Structure formats: C-alpha cells, structure tokens
Length: 586
Image: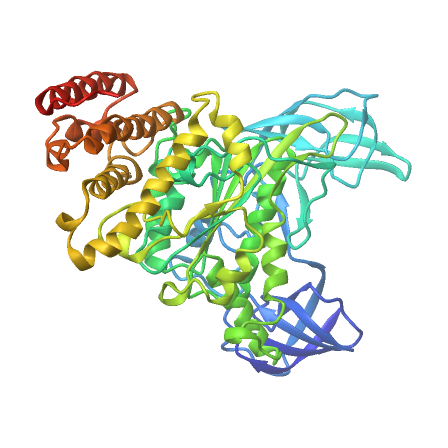
C-alpha cells in the first residue's frame, strides 16, 4: 500500500494513503526509505513516527506500508551482539557506513548467510505443539540455543534432519491440520505483544547478585521486578553492570535507553572484555546489548525497551533464567512524552501522557516465572530491573511514583551517600522489598535465624538515623553510651557490610554463605558488648578494641574462615574488658 507525505513535524510525518492502513504498521518514508511506525489513524490519514531523523525529506514524497508491525527476529545469531532499538546490528552498521550511520540504511537483524550446526532432538512421527524444542545450536561456547516450534503451530513432525543450515533454510517439516508447514531456526514476534505462556508460577528463589545490600537487605526474586532510581552520579549504571556480571541469571540483556553516548560507548567498549565468573570465558557470550543513545530519534528509544523485553521472553521460553536491565526507563518515558506532544495529545502531570502508567505496567508485567509453552513442564523466568533517573533526585515525579505500583523491590539511590563515596549508594531507610517471604525460605539454608539478624541490623540502622539527628544538635559525646554504641554498630554495618568495592578483587562479589556469616558476626559483636556497656564499661574502650579493625576488613578476606576466627578474638577481648572493669560476662 502506498501513500504520499502531506506534512512533517520533526520526527512525526503525516501522510495520506489511498486506502486505510493499520495502526502499528511499519512504514518506509520518503525517497530515503526511512523506517517509521503508524501511531495514529484518521481514516486514510496516518501519523507516522520515524525511527530516524527526517531532515531532507518533504511533502509529496512517497510512503510505503510494509503491512507488518515492528517485530523482533528471533533465532541463532543474536547472542553476543550489540543492536539498536529496532534490532539492527551496531557493528554491521559501522562496517557499512562508518561511525556516522547513513539514514535509510536498513539491514536484517540476523545474518542470512551464516551457517549454524543444527542438532535435531525430535524424530519424524513425533507429536509436537507450540514451544516444544525440536533441536539445539551451540551458538556460543557459553550458550546453547534451543530451537522451538513457533507458538501458533502444532502437529506431527513429517521430516527433520541435523546438519549445517542458515536461519532461513528448512530444517524440517510439520504436518498440521492446515497442511505442511516448513520449520526453520528463525521466527519473528511483534515486540509490543508479550509471548504466550502456559502458566504463571509463584516466585520461589531470589536472584543472587553477590551485592550484599541487594541480596541481604532488599532482594529481588527470580521473575520479579525491581526499580533503581537515583539522581546523576549515584551509581545506577555501575550497580546494574555489577548485577549483570555477578547475578545467577543464565542470560543477560542490557538495554541502554536514551543514555549519554559516551557512557554507552564505555559500556560497549569494556563490557565485551569482562570475564564470566561462571565459565571463565567472556561474559558477552551470554549477553545482548540494546544500545539506543540519547541523540537517536525518540521512536527508536521508545521501541528499544519492548525489543529488549521480547528478546528476554524468547530466551525465557527456552527454559532459561533471564535478567533484563533497562537503563533508563525515565528516558523511555521522555520519548513517550515527546511523541505524545507531537501528536497534540492533552498532557497530564509534568507533561507526560495520561497513559504513562498503563505503558509502565505493560513493561513490568512481562516479568515473571512461568511454565513455558510445550508438551512438558519446562520453566523459565524473566527478571526486569529498571533504572529510573528522576530530575534532581525527586522521587515524587511521575515516572518514579507510577513505577512503584508495579515493582516488588525498590533500591533508592541516595545522592548524599554517593558524595560520601558510599557505594552502592542504596539508602536503607527508603528502599524496600516485597519478596521477603521468598528470600527467607531460601536464606534459611545458610542460617535459620537469618531473618531475625537482618531485622535487627535494619533496626540498628534506623535507630542510628534517629540518634544522629540529636547528635547534630548536642554532639555525640553528650549522648549516653548505649546510644553511642548504636552509632558505632551502624558505622560498622555501613563500612563493614553495606559498602562494597566494585573494583576490589575479593569484595566485588560476596557469596551468600559469606554474606550471612559477615552480617551475623557484626550483630553478634553488638550482642556481646552491649551487656558490658550496661554495666559501666566506657564506649571508648569498646572503640579501642583491636577486633573492630578486623571486623571492618572481613569483607575483603577470602571465604568464611577469617570470620570464624574473629569470634575467638571478640570473646578474648571481651573477657579482658570484663576483668579490667570487674563486670560480669552475660
């Protein structure tokens, strides 16, 4: 179907078709054949939002309706790649056009020429339904691609063969009620529609990240959703990169949505060099990066999160645990606002469209732990972690407040903590998690009393925050020793547990057993010295205990043996103080 451009408003093109098109269709715009999408219809008049800059095209130029929506191509050849918001390979675009991508350069997302070693796992005569795995491809040394029957197909395998094929070559045939359907390694899916599942399951296990403040205080479940809001410089990107590297997810998808070009360039340059702690190989071998920086057109930015989530659902359907990192959803929401303004829609709060909440819900509700389509009970999960960039760190702005309605974990980054070089700068007073029941069941394997120890640590931190308000007025030395002990323990928790050095060889990752033991030894130290304070031992003597320095350095020691040794030092020094002041050890 063809039409003609009537008017252009920035990246919005108004065109007249000779018959009525469909909303959501992809359009080739102008003589340059720029890629665009129909976002509004009025009879034969279509409002097209371009994914590329529209300068140089004008009224009277042709537009062509491709007849299909924006889709993701799914199959071997995507893993380890860096793509833009509409799934074009950034490296192929560079090879074709150099550092400045020429407009109208449309390339296929998956290489049609590359040959993949396909190994069939079914045989002729087998009954299969949508989602069943019919074969595998070792796409990278760290990732096995599982080729599935398309979700809307079912029948009997008529023929299938192992061998070397391209993604478009037929590897087998499926006999259905409507005839024989060719089976290929590639399938396509509209990015704005969630892929179907058999059943949604309750969440049962936390996503372990190796970051103590996350895993111990504010965990997120596998298949859950979390938001990490914070102002400029608070460490959103580094925190998400740490989770990307160390989390126990099988597949990582990083979405750079509207981030600064130099920041995204740094990720693209250094992320492929990171070592995968699982295999010792490169982390990029099980990672996809969707890079859509701030100077690219807003439509491509708006589409990038849908593209990343669709890719995540595809690997979830194979039975993998997938973690999708969206950085940042605020830039995505700003793209929605820009498009809405060009469509002359009535704005709501802060200029955002009235449907902002619905769109945020559509994204976060695609997370989950599921039984995938297919004959068996194959399970997979998609965990969605979204960074939010509230202007000036104002958490009352619309994107943050709407996001709070659809997530289970909230990691509130604090500018003041970041200025004090406290990283991760997650504020323990403003953050929360709704996955405590899931986490408690899992953590009990290391320490049955974990939940009580965590609660006691949080109480000490909250109490210390209240005492600090008084200390600012009258001075810390005017406080009673019991309150000064609380301040000391809060400082130990902050420096010895919450602060974690992403660039330290040992401290960058903390295994679950060590996290539990480290928190327990600090709380046990408090319980050991509190009776001494109540019986008159001065707080200065507690501060002078040599074991304090060791407790703060335990996080940088390998394993849990140094933690066990610290208990003997605590007991020995506690006895010395008790004997010196002739008090009873309780």
